[in-house]
Image 1 (tube, one colour):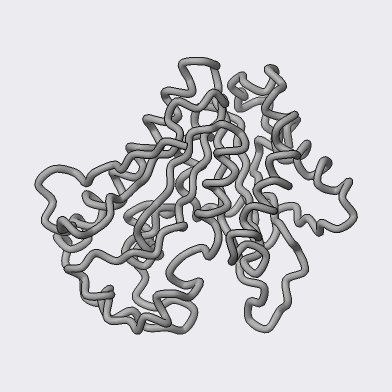
Image 2 (cartoon, one colour):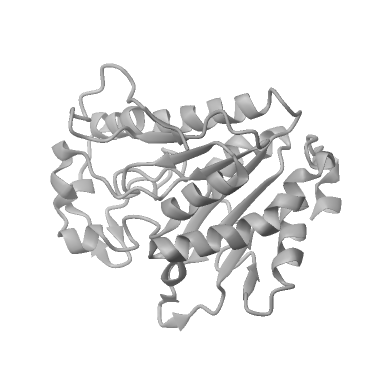
Length: 278
């Protein structure tokens, strides 16, 4: 599967020659009329930020990235023959699934862990992260969606995330969560397909809800244009190995493929149809 890196905005001083590009685009010429994205799959920190002042162990935790999500997204894109846009940098550098002006965009504390490198940032510090990391990633997503839109009126967006098995002492029972908002065209069919497998515990709008107002990627690249969309949260202990990522990519692809083959899916949803679709 072919890939290319998306370089930072010109003139930004944040990223050095040894830093990865903010986004990697896989299979740009894929035939699927859907785009796979992974906002939180990267764990890199620009060298100039000195690890954000965190220990390597903390930078490897879920606070910094969605464990297993990028590997699963790669495998899923290959199975669907879909283009994919994958993030490179830790969400502690800047969260790609939050508006840049949101208080949770650059966290000073995450799950009880202080992030020294995010404290007392100047407006210029924040602007550098937006220009070097946030904007190139979302530009890549926009380009991928536009290319898919050359083949259908409303290309689909598939967002891949992962969640911790335990949060605040609660053992989360779901293997996979399916998040959706007013447009549930993909989600309803996907949940129905997965629910046929007695070995898979599916959470509808679990462990989070697609109606929550703190997202950005789906809300920016799909919802305003009425494009079909789905956000998948996979439990991290199921995909923290390559074998697990491949297994769950296959499960997801088998359920999604018939949905994506339905050409009736690819029409913009009008706002007055949202209640019906949900």
